[in-house]
Length: 196
View 1 (cartoon, helix red, strand yellow):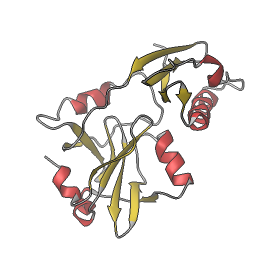
View 2: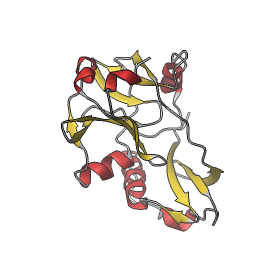
View 3: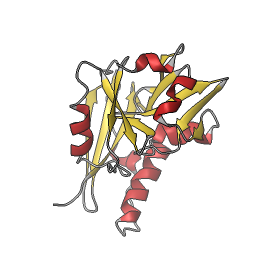
View 4: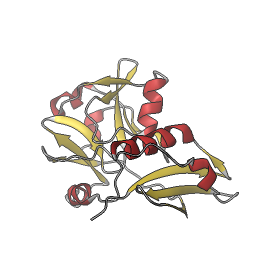
């Protein structure tokens, strides 16, 4: 079966956000498949002029399709730690079976926080950052190097660190990072309180 990939791009009142990072990741995926010529995503994006929309660009080596849906934020306050030492999701692929299976283990929680080989990675929908002594740290070991994570690292607003499950109690704040929610702080008091 041919692999398909996607980008989720934020558009508010017709304005497209942080397109350079999505273009770079799109090109990086296609380069890994041996391609050397790429479409310019901006030419394909025509979001509605009113409202907050999620632009979904689905592509492979031969095709590119864009769809739009009004964005409704998933409220995440509590996460369940789940464990998978073999999970891989280095490219934003349509096939998310492994992540969906882990999400299915959340029980009464809002989402999962995936632990791989004792290291914190991501939730099912976002990279994460943890706050300690004036600095926001993001795991050096994400499953997916998200566009918001890449942008905030470039801006030096977050710093990479090895974060193990056992380290969570050392942090106070927790934030989720993705293209739609940007940098969403879900607690500032005690990182441990988000675990259910």
